[in-house]
Image (cartoon, rainbow, N blue to C red; front, side, top):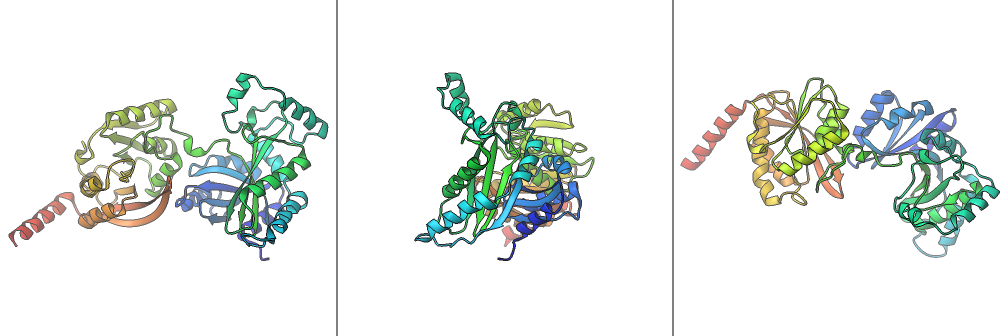
Amino acid sequence: MMKTDIMKLADQAKMHENVLTVMATVDTGFEWMAVDEYKEKLGSNAQYVKERGRIYFNLRQKDFSKVQDMRSIDNVYIVADASWLPFSGIMKGSELDSDLEIIRKFAKEKISLRRALDAWKEIVNFHGIMYPSLREYQDSDLALQRPKSPVHCARTKKRGLDPSSASKESLLRFRVTCERTGSHSFESQDVARIVGGELQDTFNWIVDLVQYHLQIVCHVKLGEIITSLRVTHESKHRRNIQFYGPTTLRSTICYSLIRLASPLPGDIIIDPMCGGGSIPLEAAIAFPNTYLLGGEIHCNAVDRARANVAAMNVDRKLDLIQWNLLHLPLKDSFVDIFVTDMPFGKRSGSITDNRVFYKKWLLEMGRVSKLGSGRLVLLTKDRRSIATALKMYGKLFRVTKTLGANIGGLQAAVYVLLRTNISWEDHKTVEHDAKRVKVQE
């Protein structure tokens, strides 16, 4: 079987000492933002493989901190193995047993984890026993079977442990999960069960589906199986927000939206519908040489945004104001960048309201955007309303880019607009004259 691009990438890493293959998950639709950030931090000639919702790349272990500093990615994994297995590809029938035997043989004889495990231990700062003896496992396993105190039971509600919190006497606890794409004779839990059982026999680890230190993920795509070790204890999209609202935007999405606007030092960036402050807070951290302004019509949202800013203790040029986007308290041609998450008409607003307000909001943002250089990055699911608004006020803006995005399971779109040189007053005059002629007719 011809090797896939990911398998080739993993083979290249194995040829060099201290080089790792890394997988990073990305919000679907923003993969190119992650690729651009990766090249920015690790070099424009760096190799990568892009798939839906994830990117793969090689890097030296000493540069791993640069990946952890990336703001467009959710979770980071070390790819331990990428192989091709001759599955039958049949959904049912006698092929199930043979496919399961292929997985068992792969997990027992062919899967290679040692190099990735040693790197994982160093990166996550795990101080426990990585490779326990059979006696250590048996003693620890007996201890785990003893009755637990009510306090210990209460703590088991949290899924997963921070590996760096493990004591020197702790034996590694792990779990295996499987993500499967395509038609197979087996289920995802079959892969997790078989691989987990073989790894337990090999390494004498403790299986713990709740209080685990290490999560091993097997991604099966047709015949390709990629085995990865999760590095991030918690998704990076939770990094900024302490107080959530009904439509709080993920920090990773906020970063990608801001990056689409290509902010420059000294730019004024405004989120006129900031909600809990996700966008201005992310901009203040990721682009510290800009001035940030967030506004909302609801006082509760402004209070929540201020609480989030206070919790992060951001000492940057960031202000939050209660206002109405229909009447911004700003002078004409003043703002460099608008970045906002517009009402989808689902959990916030309604389609009927959007048809009216999208036009008025776009006109007001056109008034205060800088002529010839102002940029707008608008996220919305209501494509019809934004298309109608752009058709009415298209002379004020030029659409430079559109891309689809998956936002909480909803198929949304991002519009990147550039303000034209047509002044707001001239456009209003032309619009008024056109309406007068229409009335006379």
